Each structure stands twice: as C-alpha cells, then as structure tokens.
Length: 431
Image 1 (cartoon, rainbow, N blue to C red):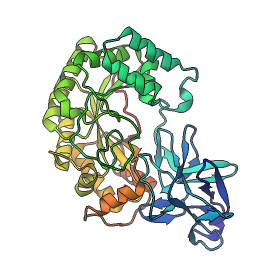
Image 2 (tube, rainbow, N blue to C red; image 1 turned 90 degrees about the vertical axis):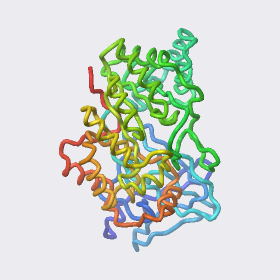
Image 3 (cartoon, rainbow, N blue to C red; image 1 turned 30 degrees about the vertical axis):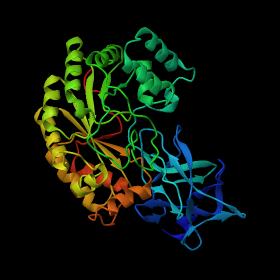
C-alpha cells in the first residue's frame, strides 16, 4: 500500500478507559490477521452497522499506522494519559474480516466472549472491518419494536402457560438477555429457539454458556432443566402455525449439545409432526453422533447446522476438545444427512488469519466434497483473539502460514462450489 493510500485510511481509534472513544489525530487504522498487524485492504471496510457496539479492551494498547512512514506503532498514552484499544462487536448478519489491532500488556484480563473487529474513524463516522454476509433482516436491531411489545407478549405467554418451564426460560432470554431469537419467538416471526440440553460432549475453549474452572467470563447462563417433549412441542407448534416461513431450532447458545439428549429431540419432533407438516425443524449441533442423527431424520428433522472452527481435524479438536467423539464422526454425520437428503449448513467460526489460510481453504474444499454442504454460515468466533491463538499454537500442529483474506477465501470457495449458499441464518425450507 502506498503512502497516498495510507493517508486515505480511517484514523485509529483509542479509549480513555472510562467510556470515551476518540480518534488519533495522525495514526491510521490497522487490523490484525492472526498474529500479524496490517492495514485494511480495499473492500474490507464498511460503515459501522446499526446495532453494533464499540468495546474498550482493558490491558491492551492500540496499534496504528504512521501514514508518512508506513510503520506500525503501538500507542500507550495520549496527552499524558493512558489509552486502550477499541474494537467493534458487529451486528448480526455481518462477518468480521480483521481483528482489532492491539498489543497486550503482560498483565491483562481475558476478554469476554465477543468478536473483536477492527474499527476506525473516517468522514465523521465509525467504520469496521467486516462484510454483510446475509441480507435477512430477522435480527436487525431496527426491525424490533421499541415499545416493549415482545416483553409484554412474553409475560402474557408465561401467564397463559404457567406449567411450561421452557416458555418461562425463553421469556427470560427475551426480557433479560435481549436474545434476538427469543424476541422473535414472542413476536411470532422468523426462527424460534428450542433449548433442551444441560450437558455437552465438548469442552470448547469459547463456550458462551459454561466455563467451569476458567478465567473466561460467560456471556449468558446455560439452561438448568430438561424440558419435556410436550413443553418443546407446545412452543414449536404455535410458532410454526403462526409465523410465516417458520423455523424452529434445537441447539442454542443457552444450552449444551442437543445430541446428548437425542431421544428427547426424537419424541419432540414426532409430537410436532403429529400436529403439523409445516415449518422447518432444524438442529444446531456439533454433529458428534451419526446414529442419533439418523433417528432424528427418520422422525422428521429437516436440516442441521454443524458448528466448526476449522475443517482441519487437529485445529477442530484443539478448540472443541471433544469428549467421546472425533472430527471424523462430525464428517460422518454430514454424510448421513445427505443420505437422507437433508439440508446441511456449516456454522463456520470465522477467525481472520486462520480461516483464510491456504491449508484451511483446501481442507474446507475436501470437507464439502464429502459432506455435500448446501450452505456456509460465515459466523464470527466469539473469543479473546490471543486466547484462541494460544489454543491453536498449543496444539503443536498449527503454523502461521499465509492468510490471503477472508473475502478472498469466500470468493475462492464460491468459485469451486457455484451452488454453495452463503449466509448467517438458518433458512426456511418449508412454507
């Protein structure tokens, strides 16, 4: 990038640590790809999407670029006061293309489980390194009412169904955590969540609902009971019968792995299909149990979304730390789904500097050839970037490698698989 180009970059952001965010008067914005800092490339920046947040990163100093020299600089103070790095947490339907550029202090807290996109200031507005990957507005902040309509609907549903614990749980997700999926449930539209499982057979470094014996702060609580099939079906059937192009999904952030309790899912799906043949029944899963999935497909499950951070077995297992299954079981589950002619999505945890490595692109190409994936949901890995890099490096099998950019990786996979769908949300497959 030339000096002229550097001068056209947005200004670097910094924070005073007390909620005030401001731009540096000279240094330009940088981003991070893995362990490397670099300037954003053409096409990697967008205006900060409505509904996004800016975060101060404690114990981390901002890194910017001197446009006169091209030198990458770490800034520890400004006008005699200490400053901290800033990142953007992008609104749903957006994929991060570069992480926030910072230098971590020797003593710094582990960051909560969010995605830390690079952000800057240009032309009187914030910008971020990202791309809108799905036009679906189902979780756009400005698509939600501001008068508390869904909260009142949630309270009314709880009063009308005092014995349904799942409704009460989802009402809390709606009114306390402001979960977009739970809010949409009580607004009677789009995709509804069906959490069912307290347990899990993976010990993910970045589990957003459970971190036992870890310094990683959880962003939400895991469900603390197991609903009955009747409770599940009561939620699902009403949603399917009232929402247009309805989707109901097992496997939420507020639970463990649904396949650890697959017989409950099997009975729940049977109850739902006894009542209606409409709507899409989906399972968000780690796909650890191919035989359980066979039973669920036979019961009427329409689609699965398989979560993975990498198509490379060694990186997958370093992050997921599976218990009682291996990466090959995940691939087998995807093959079973295609044998049943079911829709398969990959919930791909994007991490710039890893997802866009040549070795990862080749591994994903091989995986899609075996599993015949219909869709990739390019979702962000919510984790402290340093924690994730330490996790992969600690596996003993990861090397830096060349990372060509997430957009380039998206484009290359699309060329190899022209019919492959890209998105962020589970699609409706039935009317």
